[in-house]
Image 1 (spheres, rainbow, N blue to C red):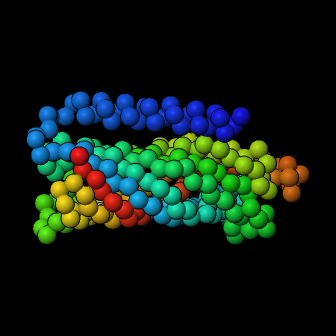
Image 2: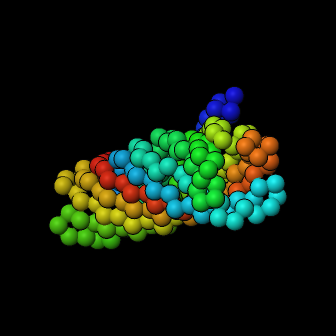
Image 3: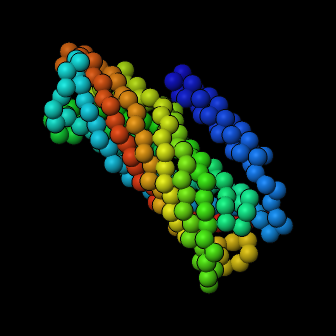
Length: 226
């Protein structure tokens, strides 16, 4: 049931993101003849930089932390260039699953659980005029951390909140034809969420965590223009 609810939430969020992008495009100036849609697709490496503040039974747990497993997944960024240099972009990905492990004084609890999440991001991007087929770009925008499913480990009743955050982006494309090329992309995400559950090892004591996730996402792939 949790998985079905998570997927339903994913569909709703994707529709909202698509509607928001469509609304943004509707307000932009009409595109010139040489402007185009673009799709960048390739594997993305998600590297977490967690900072976890634990409270057990309402009391601070000094030195207790947690780590999320770094993952690689398939990402796609759909972009629309409304001037030769500016574009609006929507990034989606195949939902990965990461194990959550205890760290520091919580290391003895082992695997706390696992979480399946859907990466969704919207950004505004400026692409510089380049030379020899190279076009660097910078971007900034918003990201939504969509939790699709949680599974208990040594924490029972595990629940992790969805969260909005921000992102910064930098990358470069190399166009070897008007319609195809390759790219390297780097995103820094700033996210804060909250997790909660119970610790059977401590008699079911409630545990709560305030989590700064702040991952980096590095993507290498192919770009198509049409």
